[in-house]
Image (cartoon, rainbow, N blue to C red; front, side, top):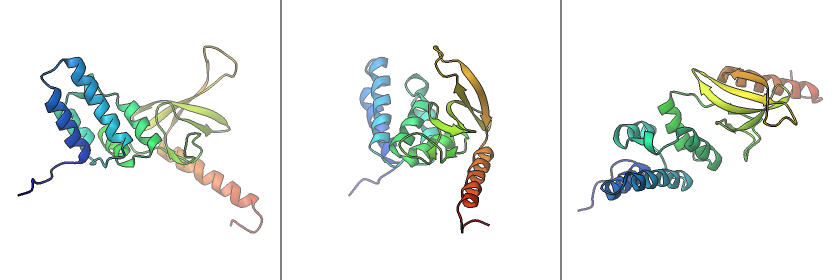
Length: 177
């Protein structure tokens, strides 16, 4: 009789790595768990919506998982199920911007992502209570000095996208309102 399949592939991989290494050194366990999550994201394995929450309950990830780095990796490789699972864990909506300067022009923003905002190139520095924090920097200064700090909500991104769309429609003859 075949074994019943339980859990998502990434969670099964993590259980396998955890059980194989839990009696080894903490350094080895932490390293292999981090590599297993990276592998699951890079291999574009399908994450369950609550997988990131379940990892917290089972695998003490505070020692080996940098959530924002994993979120950036998930977005960069296009593993949306991993990105959604992390968003669920963080209680954070997706900040989608079609002025993203990464591999995809319309994508989720993450810490370190660069995008056009109000005529400048901004970099996401953090997320906080329903908004992302992004900064523009003075050109030529080293170390880079902050020129302007923005607190941007999902609604701000949507309004900016709608305003640019309306401006394009108005500028294109025969199209628009």
